[in-house]
Length: 199
Ligand SMILES: C[S@@+](CC[C@H](N)C(=O)[O-])C[C@H]1O[C@@H](n2cnc3c(N)ncnc32)[C@H](O)[C@@H]1O
Image (spheres, helix red, strand yellow):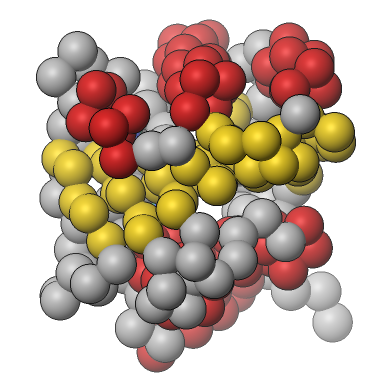
């Protein structure tokens, strides 16, 4: 029997809450990491667009397994209680002149993960342009502060210059590709760009 869009959304939301995660987005990172092995115990990880905190909590629990450091930055505070001991929470615009130097000071990073997304307006051009800006800024951070052999994943809205960013990532990484996790809503135009093994 076909699984409806609503059933799929409910399934992941209920599963997230039963496992103590604030958002269903955790299953996107789970699938990305299971298939691409981005993060390992002991890593220093930068999580951009981290609130409410599912990717951060999953990284703490399942990837660095409490052994490493996660710098979690968002415009809004994390809704994790307690915030795990491996996490340094930084609240504000990751690319502002006040916050960016604080992210840089905690690096360099073994992995940079970004689920950052703009507030959507419903205007596809506005939304994809804003998403492209965020993805470009994360890519620039990675160029400067991701360690050799480091890995990256960034979210971008399709139609927002993802081919250009992927082209740039192919110059930075041994392997770069676009990936759509199963937990991503069928009607979402998000896609994840994955870079493996920083040159
Ligand atoms: C889809 S949510 C992230 C969900 C998160 N990965 C989780 O698993 O809980 C996207 C987040 O990007 C954040 N964001 C957007 N622009 C940002 C910026 N310039 N700096 C930091 N965070 C930003 C938003 O505040 C929002 O919380």
